[in-house]
Length: 322
Ligand code: DGY
Image (cartoon, rainbow, N blue to C red):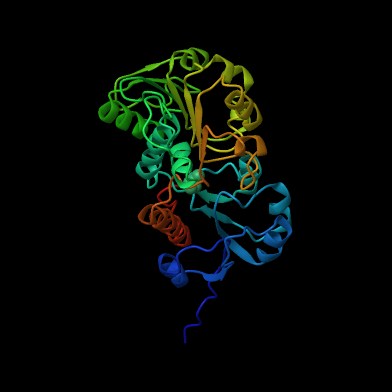
């Protein structure tokens, strides 16, 4: 007589797509926190008791305190590409197996970067509000005149997968000249002709700037008051990276005082809260962390996390380990 071995327990810490999660049930006993509100740290630790695995997003902080409280935890799979919620030294010290979801969201996120650049530079948000609020009295020669995008110079801060996909769109689609800054110049070669510049030179040269670097202690406020002051007053700043890479208070001051023309922001310090001064800036286009949000992309992100966890259950490294 064969006795079925108990399947390891896995906490799914977010409402995800049940049909995409279904294959996990062959390998794991699932406990699903079927909610869009992340579990507070104490509840997360309580819910993880007896769990071998955590399937989460960028919201669940996994640090030394959580690991100490959850002795059974061995694996963490994220549906996001960003993993700044993982305290890597603590996770590595514990020997935790970790995965994220790179690649599958590159094109959708790059599309959204262009959407934010165009919306902010060409004042789409302001125009939309103007029409809806009944303020439009008719055509005028300089009405909501914005900045030129086509043929200008785009500065990309962080030439990784997403930066490279943005460069392709900007160069081939909009005839833009591309300059870029990487923390290490050899980190990644862009797919189009592009010039590597130190960050201060990029900020002074670019007509528009897109920030696509991961958040880490060394990228905290990478774009702060000094960097904003180095940019052209006619420029647009787009932040697709993570809240905290840009100093939101300094950005709001620059936008309010006309030292920077416009901003397109999908991520914020302390989100879902948004700095009140940014909310008051009509020249900021603000979106709720949706750069990767097309249904096929979001489903692919979850499917990749599932593949990683199934591989781990078989004792394999998985397609995208951290
Ligand atoms: C990521 O994958 O890190 C995104 O920010 C979530 O959409």
